[in-house]
Length: 613
Ligand code: M6R
Image (tube, rainbow, N blue to C red; front, top):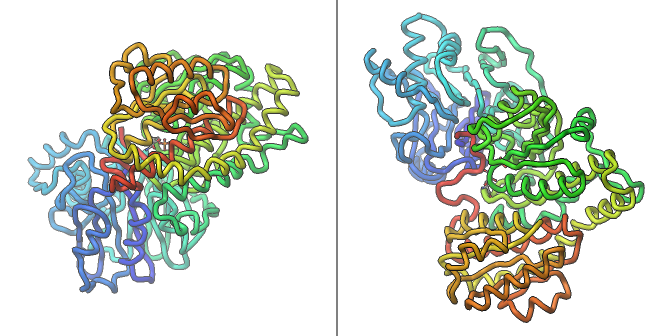
């Protein structure tokens, strides 16, 4: 969590940093702070959003002539969100300041030790310990800041992306990372540091992604990268392909709505150049080298969190149906701690929009250490998970900024379906005929999603009816069971209404007790192999006076007679229905959230990428 921005160059630093922090606010919005160097090292910080910090600073921006500084937007882990716990944190003598994203696990023993040595701590954060440790090493060893940082890094346990600024070196920023992302933008006589490329893109498209346990020293217009053993590394300069419009709202009120509405395009983008049904062609370049591992795998493990885990559940059904390879799907956070059986030759697919989720990354490392081949399915290019994988396929869905994941889910399911079909075709577990039919069906999905988006006004109306519900149940079966889970997650995370997703047939094993006339039940009842059974489940809900909102296939008349409201979606192969059927649920949660006055893009207590355990 937390967003980090740093700047050193010839421009006025304050505005660059504030603008960058606003772009990174999706990573956390508990507090914001900024440090600027201009003779003095001044820190300004405030609980709340970046706009609260701006308001606190008022009109008098006497620091506007500073050309070096750094800023932070926080998602609280250690210490409640307040002004004192906000970053940056000073060292005791206020000569140094730090911003930090991550968690220092051994902070309490370090803090005890440093307290005994006379350091006085102002905050409850683990991050403040970091800067006192660096300061202590610098003073006691009489060494340079760079050296002190390296020594400190060898003493801390945990994850970090840090930037440090020192009063006595007015042209220097030091940054380091382990487990939390950092990218450095290379301008003309200027450098940018950020948690992702969004604060950098309008100034330069040349970037260096820092690797774990590397330290970047930007001094007197020069970037030097070393590892923590003091060995100089050659920076690998990459060109950003990000467009500025992709990270702006483009006329929509919220990023979430923009991202829902752009799904026909994002799904098309993720299959662009990969699928050609006429030629019976399916290529995923990033997989080529390891495709044989998937084809020959005795089993496939899938790990992910949240929405990505739901995409993993859909993939389980698809892989097992078409490739006949057994699949197990785990929450990454469970997998990493349950001593899983992983054998040489097993394949682990890690799914992550951000590519930075700490639990997923840890699950990858565990499986890798036991000999598994890792296939990453990520959206963010160059992210930690993408880099930790042996092979993979990017989503190419464009930046997803709303905290509630929408277009990433539909792109994940699309990419995972493509992987499964490629494996199945090469393996011979599906016929060439079926392969071509499914490819054509994938190609038709963007248009079908466009059709679903036309339901927006009707969904808005249904939302107005159910916006005050206390609980909502979501039911689905087969391929649509993960869709029910995803619909429930969307509603709870942005509208704070309690919602549960269930396999429809499981309802009678418990949740049916909850159903009464107050309980809306959203049922995904599209025409597939479980349709008749889901219809019976709807009857069971109706018999208990529950209200039914049903997602049905176009032309369905049976469910329409039973449901309070129906939303018709175009027919498709049942394996692809999750991509189509999830869209009305995304819109339903969006409108309910707006009508309840919730912060859609930045729901309380959440952050976009969970880079801590
Ligand atoms: O970046 P990732 O896909 O790894 O993120 C996983 C979850 O944190 C994420 O899907 C989360 O559940 C979203 N807020 C759901 O909308």
